Image (cartoon, rainbow, N blue to C red):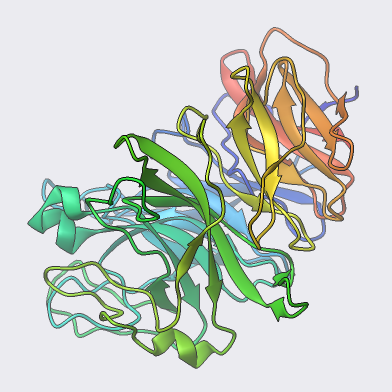
Length: 417
């Protein structure tokens, strides 16, 4: 039980729930929001877990704020974060549909996603705000959640949360017809499809969120072939009784970059009356059909085993206790992994080799063996329990990063694993 406090300054330190370590397991990236729900950080920073040295990676200007930083899985590291609008005003300030992703290197930020909110819209550009950007396990692509400015202005109930990807097909430079439009380094498309009025009892959803890449090289299908690129997410269905019923969905993605630019039945770039649509052949598939459902669960992200064989998620058991479960990317019955009396209290992450998962339960950081479900506490109970926002294994598998409040300030900690 040798947890180590890494940061000590009188301010809050906020980790994202995944991809916060540099590939050499030496540095943790963070922002300085006072809480996960407040987007007021001026900087993204990193701290060396051995020396405690802190470096400012990027400082926002012109009234903008930054946060929710993640790190690429390669070296030298690229840092990816949410960037709010510069010179915010009453009409255009930080919101779900007014934000973007930026890649930070050497103190400079480059826009990931282009923005085009004036028709005719531009394929590969977004029309609103991207959020929680996660590099794929090889660092070539990025997933994100998305909200749409055009639909928000038309009818706020049509601005539905979706999942998208940014691929290195080509940079996108829309014709600028509005002062808030800008270029992006990557070609961006939505990969989920939502409707404001799902048919009760169907697989239709009105919200897609909390996505995760599948496997370090995809997953093996039942016929033995490999699907190289796929993403799982939570989709909100309606039960036959008309109640919200979150379920696990998966989307298989193209391997060839140029296939992301091939439109399906609806325009990639969207229309004045409709959201951007997935590329040709990209279809979401429902994996879980639960009766208790994920609806009462804490906010959480789906995370795949490194070999792509299982997608982990949280769901209550028959007694109402939140447990860790897995489901195959090919579907089938979910497997309950844990039998905890206190339940899972946090986001979670896989060991890089896939044999275990780390999370918080009973106010302690736990290491859970995936095959047996046995859980070993790695920290002692203290006056201040660890934060449930992030419990993240290092790339070398030797340490787990988490947050705990000390004297009123959220500080970063590690514990040997």
